[in-house]
Image 1 (cartoon, chains in turn purple, blue):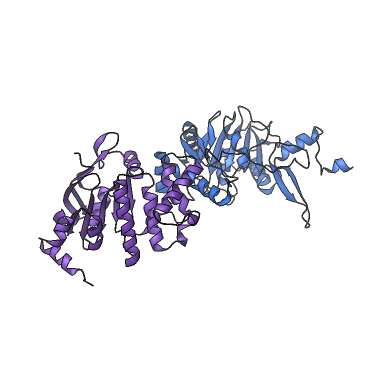
Image 2 (cartoon, rainbow over the protein chains, first blue to last red; image 1 turned 90 degrees about the vertical axis):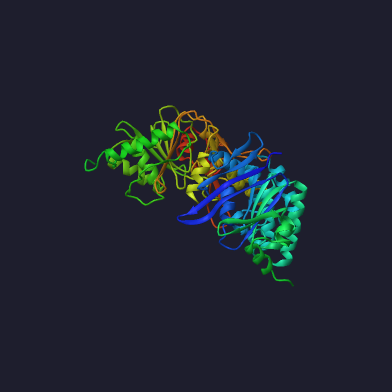
Length: 256
Length: 287
């Protein structure tokens, strides 16, 4: 089986400072990978390198494209990479405001990716947008409201709808539950788990919240100072951490 | 007059502008940056159009300026006088007699012919600007032909008003490639942009951009399959000349709701009246 995404030796320096160094893994279709670590450990740098927002100094990100099979996205042309990022890829930002157009209605936000890939039938676009609002539990009557009138949790769900409407195969998530209160977090996680399973999505989730990876991720990578210190099945890493830092991380979670 | 170089600008500047115009003609709809000069008039008064006119003008040309279709408004009069004084060219108000026509917000009703040049004054040349404020990003979107965002604007229109409510500045696609802002002409004029015999040049002075449509270029107004483009105008005949198919201005005549609709193209309207056509509120009718 070909991996959907094969990351090989990704290295990114900020001057002399290490962003992330020599990170590699394979992600298979339908698999969810969690990346955890403290602030400044290089999780977001790694995610941005994989999603094409940053150019890594070394390494390859090989994606199994629909048309041409495995291709290195670091060396592919920019139009191709941007095409990927609005069709087969999705990127969920930590702050919904970074991923939404705040001046455009919810329907327009969801419809943007459809129109970007050539949909030109207003009623179809609107029907799909309304359908997706329903799937992320936003009332259909809010389709013409701007995201500025939405709560934080709704904005985050709208961002997810906007990203998933073109049926991507790989979703990058940067702290998708950051800044939400725990009950909203729980519902969002529930929703994400359902969507990932129904659509057979592969996902890479960066978070510092171990509960998120426990619920969503099949596999887990623990990062510290730009290096991967431990990787394995989620339950295995969380229940029997081997590296000193993983042990610290797991024991730092407050038990209520 | 002789205190100025012909048509105000120095020859090096005209040469630079002509190069931008030629590049614009070679890539229809592409916005060519140029080093816009300070002109003796404020931005927003047509500094871009004036520079383009100055660069294409020859002593043999006959010059016409229209502002919202009219030859006799402040902007039109001052620019016409400007070139009378600095270039000494002949001027006219007759569309068919002019070889260079500078326009603000309208295309003349009369069909233009080969050999004429239509110069537009453009306030904002970037059609994507209102949805994507970063210019680094809009340039990339143009170069990669990523125009989905333009339809988001039209989508918002329909969702808010039930139809495409953009009535001027209506975005067009040129030769299936560049999305272009036609300057704030009413969308009634959009169909005239395409397949026109005259050369069309667009100058944005403050934004320092020139773009162009060579003669007989394909220009398509963007729309949705189920909400097609419609060239709309007020549903009245002209009150002065009775024309049914020209673009009309609404003129308030008193403070009790009285109003009349008249052709915005004054030359067109006067020519029709001279030919004996008359509308409902033309004084000669009552007399």
